[in-house]
Amino acid sequence: MDPRIAWFQPEQRGPANNLWMQIWETTQGLGYLHVNNGYSAGSQSTSNLKATVNGASVAVLTGRNGAIDSTGDAKTQEMSGSGVAVLWRGLTDGHPNKRKRDNKASTFGFNSSFSNTGAYDGYTGTPWKDRNYSEGIVGLHEEINDFYKYISPRPEEEKMRLEVVDRIKGVINDLWPSAEVQVFGSFSTGLYLPTSDIDLVVFGKWETLPLWTLEEALRKRNVADENSIKVLDKATVPIIKLTDSFTEVKVDISFNVKSGVKAARLIKEFKEKYPVLPYLVLVLKQFLLQRDLNEVFTGGIGSYSLFLMAVSFLQLHYREDVCSPNINIGVLLIEFFELYGRHFNYLKTGIRIKDGGCYVAKDEVQKTMMDGYRPSMLYIEDPLQPDNDVGRSSYGAMQVKQAFDYAYVVLNHAVSPIAKYYPNNDTESILGRIIRVTQEVDEYREWIRKNWGSPSQNDLPLNSTPTLFLNSTVFLAIHCVFCEPAISFVSRSQARMSRSHHKSGHHGQQNSSSSSKSHPNNKPHHQGNSKRRKNVRDSTQEDLCR
Image 1 (tube, helix red, strand yellow):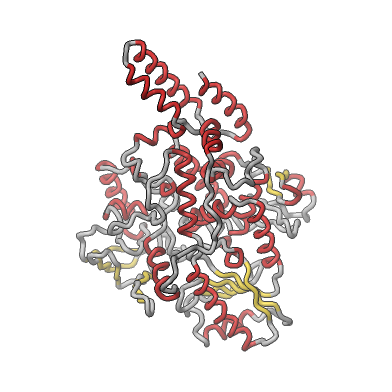
Image 2: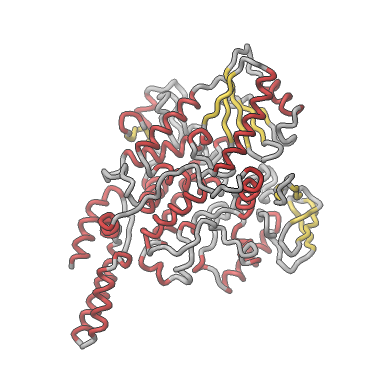
């Protein structure tokens, strides 16, 4: 099991699993595991553990609370005025040439934490789940609504980020009073996660881009963390990357790039057209973020590419009510994972958003390109600049495809009728099978609330879109469409058994069978191939009517 993508599900955990996890961790060594805040990779009872990490001897000290101190690169820093300890990840994941993990949301090594400590002192990783949900696909829809409410930007988070922008604007205006600074990207569209970065663009007149001048000024003013500021002057779009020294917010600064501002306006237009889009995008962004698949410069899929993939998915969806606020988000999420994890032909097909959206053959696209150039593996035509391939830098697109395929399998099983026989099914999170929020992120948001939140604030998210509800008609239609033929066969067999019991005089069994037929939560679900969906829907409706 790839620790970057998956973790053990509740029904997979047990004595045998714990034994094999201990054997696996022993063979891999401590250096292979990623150490998260709030728990250690060693045993809870171990007070001092000496291990070899990437060839260096490191003494790791663990206390009662699982916090980590070491004589190596890992260290704990107290955020001023917060009382919340933030662990700076100095340990790599065991590969000597890989960059150090500084992603608070990363769930790498999630299996090791549960096998050794059971949980992070009672923290489940699903802070949005404070109630039980309906069965199956409707329960997933309800949980996505709750996740959206939890993860959406809060007023205090926007306030903190505006302060970061103002500090950087002050440095820029001191250097070039006539320069104009604009915010674009997820912060301007409202589709940002608690740890998302801020995208800034500086407009001005220079003979050469003043990347190093601004970098030096930010260092002198102590705006950026000393070790975080980097100048990527060889990139397609030269930028300065930094981390704010106080808030730990990451910032990307570019110069004279107008496409980002235009893209932000385009995103807002699609948000109005498809009310379900923000829900899908935030779930997908969290899914990629915690697996370190969200950064373009490391081969992942960037926010703009992911957004365009979601728009194309909705544009070309066979259902005409994807623009309706009553549509089931759980169905769309599973279908998204099915499309891009299983059925989309990355080798021959590209994505086009313009003029209502369509798929394009890469062979035709290559004819219009210059000699020696060809479409990338994830070819997405930029609707604002058709000759620009948005996904050209996503060289890890096949790894993202693998993650999408895994999510489809897990969610498809979790909403099937068999799932009700899983242990603790009533209390376990369906969405939590593929998405977790680390304790470090939860504590980080709490620190923000204490420092920037007002006492009278009720923690209302800024994305105040009303919760998407399902009426009874849509509820029944979803269960009719998402019936798996094999499971329908089992359901028909059970119905025949109940009828035979009825003939034998078991009237109570008849009442139970009729009530289970009338209750929609007992209907099976299926997300099949999009080319056969209409046929599957017709055949399953006949099955349900038998």
